[in-house]
Amino acid sequence: MKNIFYTSAIMLCLTSPAFAADVVIDIKNIQSNEGEIGCALFANATGFPMESPKSAQQWQKANKSGMQCKFENVKSGSYAVSVVHDLNRNYKTDTNFVGIPTEAWGVSNNARPSLRAPTFDEAKFEVDGQKNTTIIVEIE
Figure: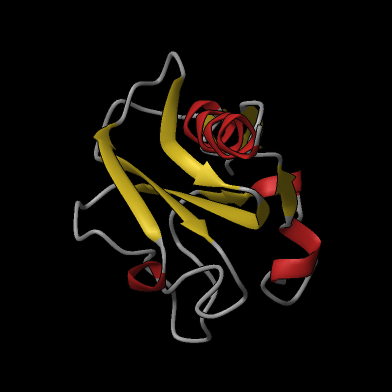
């Protein structure tokens, strides 16, 4: 009987899902086919929203008709996304002399406070590792 219990427990562990899901970023309001679209997925506030080396990131050729970034096997937890339309392909968000972005950008929850960058808490969303998540980000 003890062996049946242990065997059942092992089989249950081996057949349980990995508790990771896909996060799809649906990007809206792309103004031109010029340049690249960069998506950054942040697992915490460190570097959010513009220090993309602190995040998982993807770059794709811009497509005015709309596009998506897909992050696969994302573990359950709180995340935030930032998106930039990098017109000059330098793989960063260009800013003016006071730090205001000069390229179109957006973050999850479409948080866009005036006179400052959005915080991680304003942009965060939850990922349930058992179902995929789609986030719509409007860039401007």
